[in-house]
Image 1 (cartoon, rainbow, N blue to C red):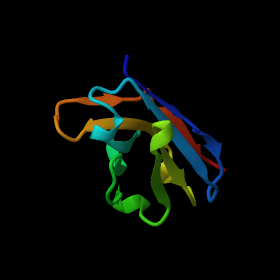
Image 2 (cartoon, rainbow, N blue to C red):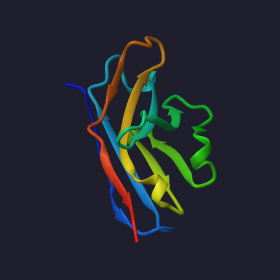
Image 3 (cartoon, rainbow, N blue to C red):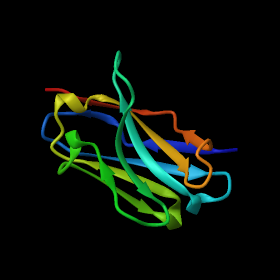
Image 4 (tube, one colour):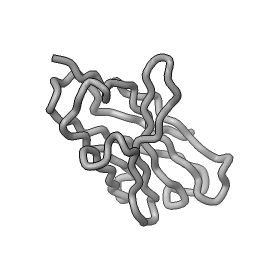
Length: 121
């Protein structure tokens, strides 16, 4: 059974920080074949790719709106990907989703259940 379990969301004030975690298990063909991605979504808007990083290595990619504030990282021994979010503002309020994208078979992908991040005074 494939599972992507996100954690770390919550309510914070503007300027504060959060760390999101995503633990993967049961991925088809093994964890090393995937690119891990973070998306976010607010009501009435399309789901937005925030950051991505291949498990096997390579450069991270970020949405323009979060460059310089967010950082994606991984701990392959724990099958875990992180999203460090700094200097949060109200525009960052969204449900954040973890996605595992198979690098060899593009139709193979898995999503987590999402975790709510709310930035408010």
